[in-house]
Picture 1 (cartoon, rainbow, N blue to C red):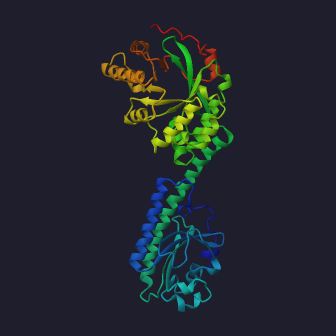
Picture 2: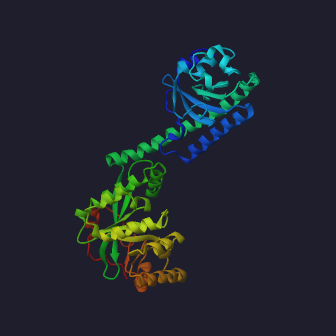
Picture 3: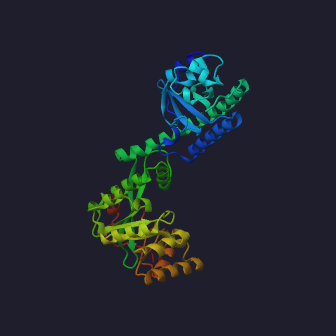
Length: 428
């Protein structure tokens, strides 16, 4: 192995850097664990004290993954060792390449600062499947290891090949993850890529618009449902930022919102308890704001969330529990948070005029809402029959495509759907 191995065209694209990868995915976490297992296998089979995966970068050997006794050898993840002081350079350029059973007496290592700490060394290059050099895989021992030989070098070479294959897969994941991060960041930095649509919420007793639910609509690629965009942002550690940006966009429309209509925003418990959310709503007609917590939102601490809800109520903000009836989580939210508005999920609303089971369950929620002095609202009203049945049951408010589809405030105004505007004839 000549000097070209160290000084040649080493690919400069950034590879995963230990556990410092920002927004590390479950897949990359799994790959990191697999590489740790490969290093542990090397230690067990060869009988050494510490194994190291290092990356060659900008004239340095940078330690990326360390398994075993790192303290004795003073090894730290992401520490950079200049090539001229690197064991790998010394031992992989001169025979016996990659092998120093007695490192303290090896003439190749006399002026290396770390040599007094190392009794034995074995190392091999790590090459990616496409031929690019990544770095080295090495093992060190506190004491000399006279039994080390070429068979151990070959075994370590097999493990290095496995590591190289994992790194290539990992690199592909990191590149893809950066693309995903870039998409979300562009939305956050420039405000482009998403807009807010508003779906009117009606008082079903007098057929007037009382509020609007703010719905995010993503205009950039790839084409997919809004919840998938928010899920991706959450996976990348940007979920709260995207939620708050959507809330800010919705609240910026207050000036164009007719009458005393409220705006309802969907917010996760994590976002609701964040300082950025509280800052975003500050001074924004908070008495006309409703915060919706969905059935699908996981609550880490109900005590913390309840305290935030109490503080929000003190500022005039109301709380709604979304998707009630869709699952057990929404019932827990209702019991623990005592909402001002209970929103019946579309699974209860759909065909409620022909399904006695749905009708009975909806009736129980209506009675419960009355008992706790909450407003009941139905989502997903799509037929005149559903609307008539909900009115008969005593549901106070509702929304759905049968009443009005989401749109901009300007579009809704042109349709005559401002606050206190009568609902178009339904035949009911």
